[in-house]
Image (tube, rainbow, N blue to C red; front, side, top):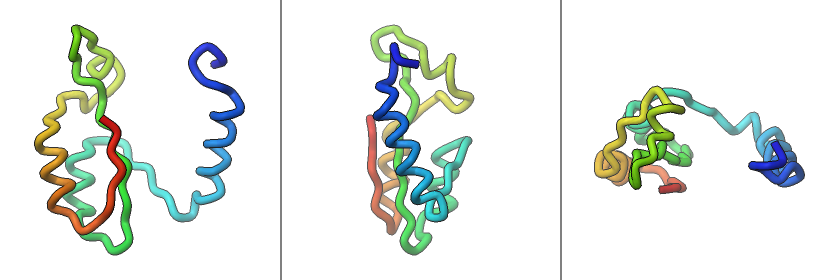
Length: 90
């Protein structure tokens, strides 16, 4: 774990998640479907971090994620059509 993550930073982040656990929901699956289903839930916020798509010959997304075919345009369109705020990591 130390080779990839700073252990204290990871522990601090997990503690922050636990402190807000009653306000968080993690969804595993097709993110576009989740965005569409929750488009105007009052007070909802989303963090969008799509899988790597293979730019530069890397295929980590295909190896690590079931939903690895990503259309970034559809993601931005789904976010633009919502009533909520979002944090994006591309």
